[in-house]
Amino acid sequence: MTQEPIERWRSETPGCARRVHLNNAGAALMPDPVLSACTEHLELEADIGGYEAAAARVTEIAAVYDDLARLIGSRATNVAVVANATAGFIQAITSFDLSPGDVIVTTRADYTSYQIQFLSLAQRRGVVVKHAADLPEGGVDPESIRELARDPRCRLVHVSWVPTHSGVIQDAEGVGRVCEELGVPYLVDACQAVGQLPIDVARLRCDYLTATARKFLRGPRGVGFMYASDRALARGDHPLYVDMRGARWVDADQYEIAPTAMRYEDWEFPYALVLGLGAAVRYALAVGVELAGNRAFALARRARASLAGIPDTRVLDGGREQCAIVTASFGQHDAREIVKELSRQNINTTASLRWYGLLDFTEKQVQSAIRISPHYYNTEQEVDEAIAAIGRLVDSAPCS
Ligand SMILES: Cc1ncc(COP(=O)(O)O)c(C=O)c1O
Image (cartoon, rainbow, N blue to C red; front, side, top):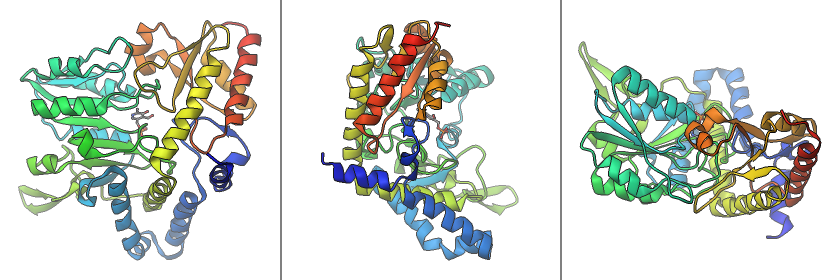
């Protein structure tokens, strides 16, 4: 790849001038168009009033749904804008009236909050949570999902396509095929996938997909989106706590749910962020998600290869396919201390603790790990600089 697009992407990303930002799995640096979409709308709200500003931008707001639909290969009527990925997950999961003994099948590496919420469902609703086994090389085994989801009490399968604490890309399509064969509803957490992996909901065969704006999609914080399939809408699925945007109160004892995925939305919206989300989607589509991902993966491979050369360092990412999340542990060193020192050198990374990926990290005997997540606008030099700094820190820091 030539330097020209990289330089352009960087010049459109003000944050690049000040920091080596390798925390795109936390929140990526927003490009200019995203920032202006948000600030212009806030200024309009201040100028003419919040409700009036939303009315003035009704066409642009509607276009956000078309853009999201293009990004994931669906129709706009299957897309809902939500506060974040977790909010979307909750909207989807409360659409199932789970009873004691019902089974949820998930992976050993699904997102921390969702594992906690599954446990809460187990403790409060008597739901049985089953974790599918991993393949020997890492990553969930779709055949193990099949074994567990065959249970007639299985109500749904949930997979975090890219876990928060690991660079593995789960075989989300393989799991989708199994779920379709078994006729079991399938929920995909695409929070870390969106922006680094092309998404086609038809290939995933999922009932629901949830995501957030701020990560590899490069949108603002505080907004996300979800997809609900025609199958889910036709079943009459809707969230337990459906809002007045998602339903109308039509009689004293009756409500009527919206025919589209709007049934998952709340009435109150941060419209500035919604427009920022739309700008991020258009920017991602203009760059090309596949190209963005391939470049980010190449930078991640470079980081893994260099990390492997640092004494006491274990690169933890397994599986057949790895993405732009690099995780490594450093013997007895606390990754949080390394992250703190890197931050003093203007290098942004983050630390994952054992409980973030409890099942996975316990098996790997990891207490803490660094998470380095480059994106396409990062440079090879930035990655090299970060790994060299880590090498010096590991060498000089006392073990904790
Ligand atoms: C894999 C994964 N899923 C879901 C989430 C939740 O996203 P949000 O914080 O937008 O709710 C995260 C957040 O880090 C994540 O990494």
